[in-house]
Image (cartoon, rainbow, N blue to C red; front, side):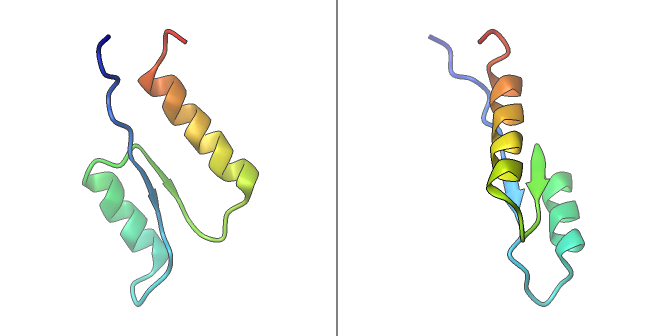
Length: 59
């Protein structure tokens, strides 16, 4: 069985630089999705499901 492509979800946790800067850099470095805090469980689940579907479209 072939391995699916690895999908990356970047999450911000705050810091000295604004959240959007971190998430923008993550996208530029190849993150497939981003999620900023605070986020809901349903928001996290939605992004994980989207990325699983993208990695495994045949399922």
